[in-house]
Each structure stands twice: as structure tokens, then as C-alpha cells.
Amino acid sequence: MLLHVPEVLSKAEVARVRALIDGAPWVDGNVTSGAQSALAKKNTQLPEESAAAREAGGIVLDALQKKPLFVAGALPLKVFPPLFNRYGVGDKFDTHVDNAVRMRRDSDFRIRSDLSATLFLSEPADYDGGELSVEDTFGVHQVKLAAGDLILYPASSLHFVTPITRGERVSSFFWIQSMIRDDAKRALLLQTDLAVQTLAAELGQGHAQVVSLTGVYHNLLRMWAEV
Image 1 (cartoon, rainbow, N blue to C red):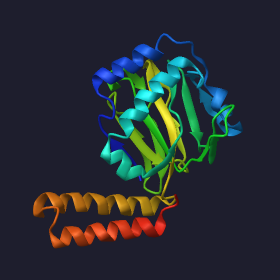
Image 2 (cartoon, one colour):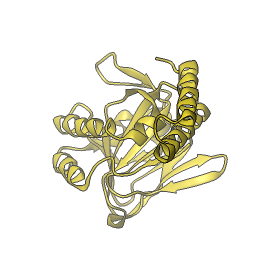
Image 3 (cartoon, rainbow, N blue to C red):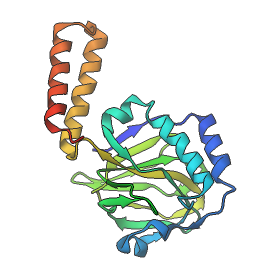
């Protein structure tokens, strides 16, 4: 399931994040690559231990917990501290799959990467190329969103970033360990949650059908959740 979460960051918050990271020192993006990704990846990245990355990452994490669609779609148990990358002209990331387990350097923090997230920090008009392309059974889906918007997709997906031919693409990326490991179950829970919200708006929160469907949602969550 691909899920577009609009306006995770406001334009003012995007500007604040960019002010923090644009002038900071950037390094080769392969500092966080596995063996396969290192052969496919050409970009730059903020060191995860840098003060700019930590402060900007805090802004992103604060914003995420305020977005009901992100919470409903990801059902997050753990979120890897956001990282930041930059693609200039000629940069790209060939087809790869993300590591199953992500560990934070020099700590005991680790997560199972159920979901990958890209939060766009450049406007689409600012660059050509640079589409995030995610493969599934229906084909390849190309994603290029407004600054402040986020795309959420299964970390098990084959995906790639097309070469930049003009301008610069800046984004935040991170991984989520969900309470629901299985993507199909997460999708079903999201569909049920959205149906509850629609019914509640039409019939009222206390209506018998709303209460019944809410019970179905929570009982499925209770059955499947790993916490």
C-alpha cells in the first residue's frame, strides 16, 4: 500500500527545516547504505549525528504525531530518527530494497523496517527527474510530491530514484516499525478506520453502526498488533 500524507510540514516548517540543513556539512550518501545499496546509490546526506539533522529530525517527528492519517496508516510502534538526503544533477538511486533491520549508530536503538517514508522538502518545479519509483504487482508508481508532503510505502518494495537532470531534490527519509507487521492487514485496518470516520461524520459518533464498526476495528487491531 502506498499512502500519500499531505502537508505533514507546513510551508513555514519546510523553510525552517531547510534553513537548518542547507548550510550544514553533507557527506556521501553511502554512509547508511547496505552492501547492495552502496552499488546503486549516488547522492549526499546529512550525518545522522549532526546537530542540524537531530534538530530538523525533531521537527519532523513532532509533525508526524499530529497527522492522524500518518498514524492510522502506519500504526507506528517505533520510528527511526529522520535522515536527510540531497540529489543534485546526475545523482540517482538505482533499484534496491531497504534493509530489514535498521540500527542507529553507537546506540542500542534498532527497528524492523516495515515501512519506508519519504518527506519531500523541495517543490516539484525546483528539479527535473528525481521521481521516487515504487514497484508492486500493479507496476511502477512514480511519486513526486509538494514540499511538506510524505509518501509511505512497504519497505519490502523494490524502489528507485530516477536521475536528476536539473536542479536539486532534498528530502527526509526514515523507516517505521509498525504494530501491524503485515501490509495487507495494515491496509484493511486503514480502510476500516476511514469508514468509521465517514460514518461518524454522517450519523454521529454514538450511532449503533458507528459503535459496531469501531468495535470491529479495535478487535482486529487487538488480534493482530505486536506491542
